[in-house]
Amino acid sequence: MQLPKRSDQHIIESDSFTALRQVLPRQWVIREVSERDYGIDLYIEIVGREQLLSGDMAALQLKGKKALKFVNGRATFSGIKRETLNYWLSLPVPVFLCAVCLTTRKCYWANIKSQNRQGRFGSSSKTVSIQLTNEDDFSDNGLMAFSISYTREKRWPEIENAIEKSLMLFNTLGPLVLICKRSQGNLPCSTTIQYLVNQHYEYHWLLSKYLLGKKPKLLSYWYEQNISYQASTNLPPSLTLYYKVLQDLFRSTLGDYRDSIIAAYELVMELQAHYFAHRFPFLFAHLEARPHTFLMDDWYSRYFFDEYENETAYPEMLYFEDFNEFDPDLDELIRS
Image (cartoon, rainbow, N blue to C red; front, side, top):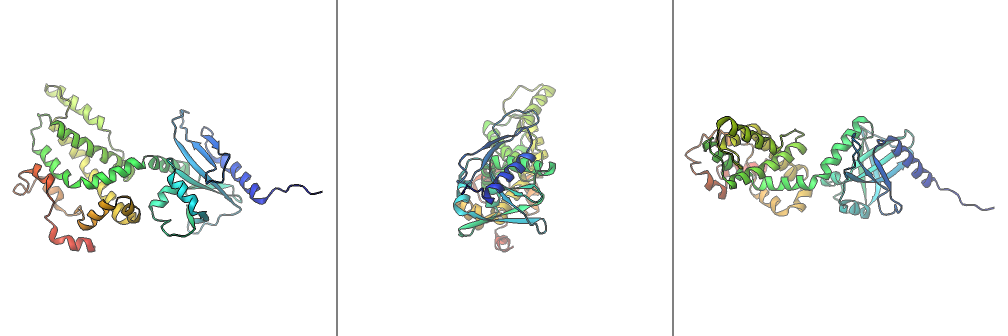
């Protein structure tokens, strides 16, 4: 008598789901997708120790193999259709490939959109390969890395905006610092200055946290410092920060902010140049034609220590001029 026979692939899929469920934290919510032919098998909602549902959703594609072979800590999962990749990249939530080694029952994950920015899928082939590392599993350390990767990916639109805008506005940072340093500390800054500082600080906070891995203070900290300064000096309340507080702010954060912008510049022009050349073509073209001179030693001398008074007598005018002190060296900078 002829009867249906369960395929090996269905058994692998079932075993893979079982293995993944066993390693995911119990408090996470797992929502299976009934139609799996479109590249997503389930959605997970990441729930913290307080067990509060906050809408932290990620899409997962689950793949199982009888054995995954890692060489020097890396393995490749091949055969992902280009259409599936395009679908993943279009989704509004972070997308992860989860690969299960059925021999060891270990599960590994890969951040799809991050690998796309790294240029791993740049060719026009019909299929793509996903890179796995043996550290990106669901052990305690692997889960911590997963959460960090998820959070960074969830906030990537903000990070990307900060990358673009901080590079566009970098030449205005030095003049802004000079204006604040030269102003009397017991005077409140103008609303325009405050808006500019707040904008730069937003970029600093995002880039320092997500590109450098630092723990920058929230902007609210400096408003609290402003209240304390007013109280200690009997100065009238002001919605804008006093220049003394702004001077402390720049003294505390300028180094990390500049390092963050350098890291952003390296992402755009070197590490992920293929992605950013398509994402921000005009910014990329401008930076190619006129590289930022971050590494010149006299940036701090010029803008923080104010040692070039004859060249920076009117810092407000520098907002609208190209910084051309190193133009004779631009060709060498481009070549290097």
